[in-house]
Image (cartoon, rainbow, N blue to C red):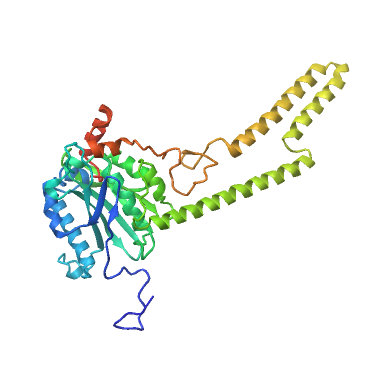
Length: 402
């Protein structure tokens, strides 16, 4: 790192955030993101993003509005190279924030016009807040207008922002951990975050007051780490596609290819080891064929003992032992090469999946669907069925993905 311009003998900490940041534009399939501005703040009221604030965050509308305005101001200040203490927020210890306005590219009511014309196509915001340069940790938060929730927009935006957040500087923000906090009653929101690769890491008991139900709620904390998060599969989980040119995508693809090469090398080495072991065992009569031969030998011995009444027993021994040897051989081959195995959390994954990574969700659970229903909703607003209508209604009544 270069020395401090005011004092060249003082080295700048590698964990120190830059004094000025350039917030990149990010493209999605249904939305695109641009740096939020102060002019976007009034649009949030038009969009009713604070609807059901107490159920979503445990704050009343006024408090939620004040917090969001502070986030946007801090983001703009960082872009302009203004210190937190001089940003108009007044808190010298305030952590940095990045804010993007979410603009839709969809015409979900099929009227020939892109949605949200009254707000210049802005339908909400997405934030990286509480950015801790020392711990390399940040919290992600999505806020959508009341009429734009449950349509898949957050699923389109979040993985792309997270890819940028985890990418190493100067391409990305270089975070080690990204986390979220979700009210306990928002089961659908929890499911969305887990499908993105987040893991439950803790519970803040009775930390939210939900005025809509008149009781306290627990706050569920989920997080994911840089070496766990797979941005490609997080998009696949919702039928989304990688968009070249977005920040961090090139690096993520390179890392994925490297991971696949390691996996293929490991599989090849394991198969070679298995072949060598089988050959060694064959010489000692201990392989699968050896078991069967041993069974046949036992049968012959039983036949020879037939003079004392054990002939039938010997034949049964030959069949049973030989069958056991064959079954063992078949089972071993199946377990090694074809059958699904389970991870520590009981989730199945294919043993021959060349794209295996440390991402906690399997390829079988994240198969891409080019006709994913939420993508269709984003474009034409038609729900798949009554069950999805009910789920969308539940989402509006609470959850951090808004």
